[in-house]
Image (cartoon, rainbow, N blue to C red; front, side, top):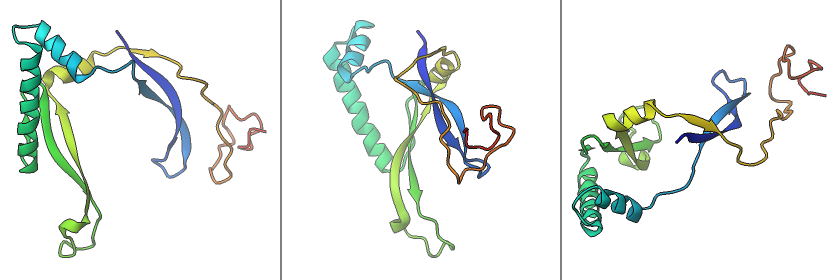
Length: 158
């Protein structure tokens, strides 16, 4: 089965020119909940769904404990988890304190099997509704008089 994607227009500002480009955006084809995952695991072996649920709950508890201690949690082929932070910058190290840390997040790095899966995906374009593919005219955005999508060469499209 293929991963579905749509095409969306976004600002591409790597050069500071506010250029609009089209990019792929993955589209969900639904959800799989915790109970369904546990049932699938249970169906593949000799453990009950309840045992699987208890094991995963125990794993989450142990992970939270380790992550709070600043440890990296490695779960074999599944991958690893680590706490990352975002902070305000300061001009000197002396000015910096933990009050400058604004947000913590969990970083996930997939293991080898999940990475291999990503390298072998197939993709299928889908439409998620009416997508406006016209470039909005914004006088603050530099224009390219050689742009073939602008017949007037003025950057206004008119």
